[in-house]
Amino acid sequence: MEFMLDTANITEIKKYGAFLPLAGVTTNPSIIKKEGEMNFFKHMQEIRSLIGKERSLHIQVVAQDYEGMMEDARAILENVDQDVFVKIPTTPEGLEAMKELKKQGVNVTATAIYTKFQAYLAIAAGADYIAPYFNRMENLNIDPREAISEMAAEIARTNSSTKILAASFKNVAQVNAACECGAQSATMGVDIIAAGTTLTSVQNAVDTFTTDWESVYGRGKRISDLCIYQWN
Ligand code: G3P
Image 1 (cartoon, rainbow, N blue to C red):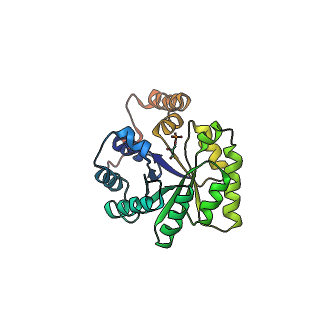
Image 2: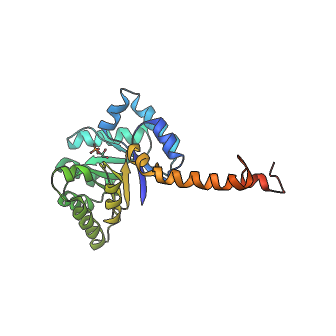
Image 3: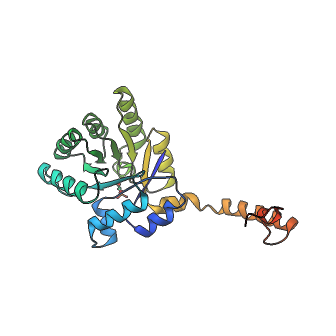
């Protein structure tokens, strides 16, 4: 699975990007709000320079009408770079914008997906990624597991290259479920990554390995200290 970070926080991207097999960074206006007022394009450029061109950067339009979405998309592409995945809400106006942007060869991520029907439309419109909102669907009594499985089936049926970028997670189990139902990618906040990578049992196991080793070779001794040949 592709792991993406759903944040615009530079410190978080640096910290978690250092150890994650990071595939990309996703943002939306609510995520931008968390950072407070900023020089938007400069901040997005900074994220790009941190993650490089080999990882995807997804930036959302704010306008709700077709013309406005197209203008937002152009502004993003011109002021950040042409490789950005422009995130477009999957509304009627958004679908119109997606079709036009795909005609122009722009990378598109269809977002705010709560239903299978929205997903099927976005796949047909040629979106590169579709972003179903896992937790928000659950809150509406829509089964995200069934929906994501059917989205994956539709992609297979239509031999489409669209990828499912599951989003809106409140816990690690939801991420696992999205992956197991066929999502190729998932974007999540660092709270989810932290919860999934800092289990007490894991740390206890690692501590025991250290204690056992040091009981034989001495405190602070490492394997590298035993080398006959020293690297430096
Ligand atoms: O990427 C979409 C995601 O940010 C929505 O998440 O937590 O606001 O439901 P949430």
